[in-house]
Length: 280
Image (cartoon, rainbow, N blue to C red; front, side):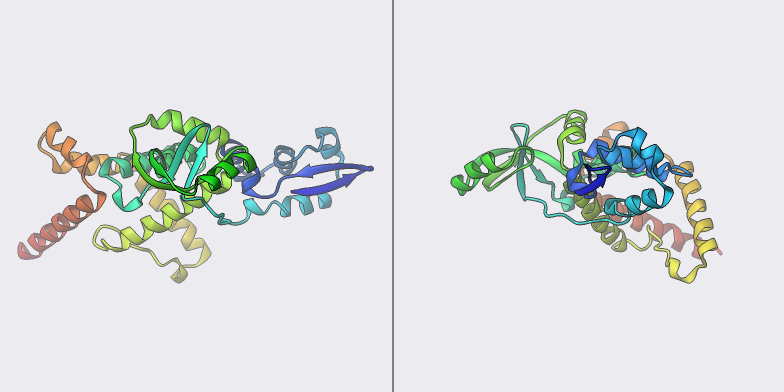
């Protein structure tokens, strides 16, 4: 949090993700991604500086203040409690290795619907899930945190179980009340996990080394890949439909671990390539 003195009045400007709600951060990132982004509008969303004062500030002062909005320039990792309470329910980061085909398909679909910020709250509802507490540990720690924290409250849990939940309701709750620092950190952890997962299946995922390209070529390649992703707008859904002979068979695939699908698709790809070589 920055303190900014203008004409003997001190205003405050938020500069860290942890100071924002997820909803507010998504809005600010959306504004920042626009062509010719309006820096004054973005600063207005981050601070309590009145618009009439912002309008009259010199460009160099606006640029200096905008440059201090660290969360717009780089990912910042925050400490995420293993368990936390939010609005009387307890949550935990899901074990990514347990993701089903349906989980990844839904996350992929939300990413395809816009940039990564448009539906980030929906994606986080798959990455962080509610639990039912079976037994606690360090009860004094939990009670103390209930006093010290007003929003996201760290908890110590001994035993728990995952529970069924409505993804849309959890997404809306996270959007309004979840610390954006936690949301972005967990999303970054997921993207790292996904990158490492794809490396396990090189036949399916061709990793492009952009260091070999010029800046202009990198832009062209990324635009081309973006067009391909639009053409293949159904992603994993299309893959499942292609390998299933019935809806019932598809229902079984949705509940399987994502690695099972990637392994099967890799196998099918190798078989197809061998058949192609043999037919030459």
